[in-house]
Each structure stands twice: as structure tokens, then as C-alpha cells.
Image (cartoon, rainbow, N blue to C red; front, side, top):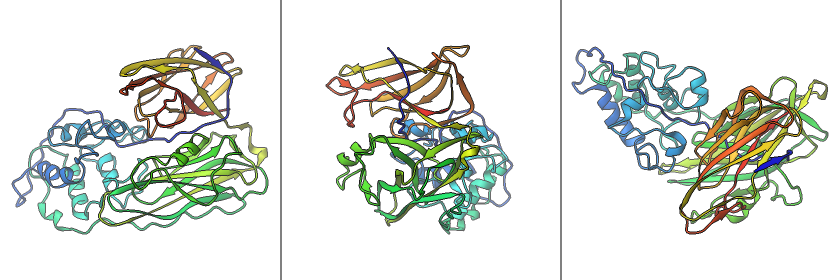
Amino acid sequence: MKFSGIAISFTAIILLSFSMESCNKNTDGAAVPGSASKDTWTIIQENILNPTCATSGCHASTSDAYYTQHNLVLSSAVAYDNLFNSVPKNIAAKAAGLLRVKAGDYVNSLLYQKIDCQVTSKYGSLMPLGGPNLTSGQIEFIKQWIIKGAPKTGSVVDETVLDNKAVCTQTFVPLQAPAPADGFQLSINSFTVNPNTEREVFVSRNTPNTSTVYVNKFITQGRPNSHHFVLYGFQNSATLPPVNTVRDLYNADASVNIATFAQMQNHIYLGGGTDVNTTYTFPAGVALKIPPATPLDLNAHYFNKQTTSLTGENYINMYTVPQANVVKEAQSINFANYNFSIPANTRKTITTDFTFAKAVTVITLTSHSHKTGEKFQIKILGGTRNGEVVYENTDWEHPLVLNLATPIQLKAGEGLTSVVTYNNTTSRTLNFGLTSEDEMNIIFGYYY
């Protein structure tokens, strides 16, 4: 099936998360005089990982609800091999040369980056997500273990380090808004996340600009335990949600709020993702056009596994450049296959080709499917790179947003191919549709 042309809609949630590819290695460390006889790694596994990380729904097994997102199991049988000198799946951490646990180097160990609340992480949410932070003693114990070579056997860290029971705390300082001449700020004001629950909200805001501006950089910020923070525009301005009103995605009984879900189908993705404290800059000379008083939708998702309430709060700064500096205006990709079916109780892979009518440069890619979507690949169609896989996502709820370090150059008539595998475990045939009980098959992205 072939489609050509480009529409201007784009909705997705990106995701970058703590995940794994294992490397089976072992290193023995020298014993610490006067320390406990129990192996340091055993203490970490039993006292830290088992009660806080290897829990049901998180990192206990491959059947956890979010396993397809993080691909990391930290149960006793496999945790060490899944961490020690293992290359992370997290794209930013991998690009920076981090390992999950890099023997002798805690700074370049993703495990340490994910647990120390004093570190301004560039690699996703602080862990344990939604739970109390680790104590200062636990963090220091893991740090010293890594410094000593992260051995699987041997007592290499004095166990009295764990006596510091102070929970790691961090002060939240709201993101400072840019000067009016440089851009503007939008926010989700503080809201409550009840104990032992999660909450995903949307708030529609109108941009404050009174004339057309061009945005070339986003800076986002969220409070701890924020799983993602995303900015959307709208395809159809005739069906907008109320402005400055908090809209929940889930009702009190955990069912989907149908009105909010329906409004999501009108989204155009503009920025953000699972790294809630991050900066994204368009390539030089490229910017996004924002007309006066543009309605935008801010979306935040928080986890709370504690017995007390948490506060959610998010900010985004949008920085502008003079129109004279804009050589290329960023455009959205919306390549959708609207005509497909997946038989009941069937796993099926659907391949669809899409072409561009003119030469383009693709700078961002992401995907959109619903809950039966197991894997979404994007390949280059045509040219010398024909058939090359440039994108892959296995988490339909939080799809990867891939900002291409090397943009994809495509000639007129060339394009992209979606290869989507669905596992329809229902008793009915699934087709394209807007509800959570239907399916979708869409490539989103940016090009110029």
C-alpha cells in the first residue's frame, strides 16, 4: 500500500528510559578490613534492589507492565549480569558512553545517575520512580561499590556506610521564564498526586505572543516522579478543550476519561518526552512557526508509590529567534495507514510505504499505535539507504521520539516505510479508529 503527500499532525510521547542489554562478567574486589563478611553485592541486592526496584510492576520480571519500556529485570538471579559493564538502551546514556554499572567509574554508571537525587540527570526519571528516594547511605554504599570495581563477591565497602538513614532530598526551584524578548513560558501549576496511584493530566494554554514568532529551542522541567511531560498543538481549532482547566486522562475508578482521550486524537506533537528536565534545539536555521495566541496542550504524567501525597508541577520555556534567522520552517509528518485489519486472536505485521512529493530533510521521527502494537519500525524507502531501519519502538504507551543526530536526506519520490507488528488478543477484528479499543498505524515527525 502506498501513500504520498504530507499532512500537518503529530502526536506522540517520547520515551527514553533505563533499560538493558546484558553482559556476563565478574570482578572480585579486595576485602575491607573490619567490614561485614557478607558480600557487598549481596547487601545491595537484598537491602536495596529487592525492596525498592525488583518489585511487581517495576523491575521484577519480564511480565511487568512496563517491561517493554525499560527491558530491565533486577531480580536476584539476573540483576548483576544485567548491570555490570552492560551497555544501556537509553539513547542519551549510550551516546555519552555510560554503562549501567561501569567498574571503577560511578560518574559514568547509569545506575548511580538514576538513584542520586542530587544529580541533575540527563537520562530520564529518578529511581525508584514514584517511591521514596534512597537514603544517603544506600547511595554512598552503591557509589563506593562501583569505585571498588563493582565485584560480585567479596566485602569491599564498610557496611556502616548504610547507617546514614537520611532520605536523599532535592529542592525544586521552578524554571525561570525567559525575558519577553527571548521567548515565553507555559506551565502546569501544582496539582496533587494521591498516595499509591498515578495521575496523568492535560492543561490547555494560549501562547502569550501577539504576533507570529519562530521557536527554535525548548527547555522543560518537572518535579520528581514525573514520568513524562509533552507539549502538543491541535489539528482542528474548532474542537478545542477548555483553556486553563486540568483534565485527567483517568477517572477515579481508573477507567479512561473518554472525553480527554478523544481530545488527544486532535493533538499535534511539538516537544517534550520522558526526559522531563531537558533541552531540545532545532538545527541551525530551522524553527517552528507559532501564530499569535496559539492554543497548546500541556501533558504531564506522575507516579506515586508512597503513602503520602506528592505534588506535580511542570514548565516549558519556548525560545524564539528573529524571522530573518529562519532559513527552513519545521513541518510535521503525518504518514497514516487508515485501511488495515487485524483478525481476532492473531499476530500480524503490516508494512506500508509512504512517499514525499518533494525533496526533504527528516530531523525527528516517532510512532503512534494502540495497545495491541508490539513493535513499530520505520525504514528508509528508496535511494542508497533503501530498507535501512532508522527507528524502532516496543512501548506503544510511551513511544520513542528520535531526534536524528544525522538528518535523513530524501529525494522526491522517496520516503519512509512503517513495519508494525500487532498482537490482537481480542475476540474481534481490529481496524483503524480513534478509541483505545481500535488501532492506529502512524509515522509522526519533523522535516524541512
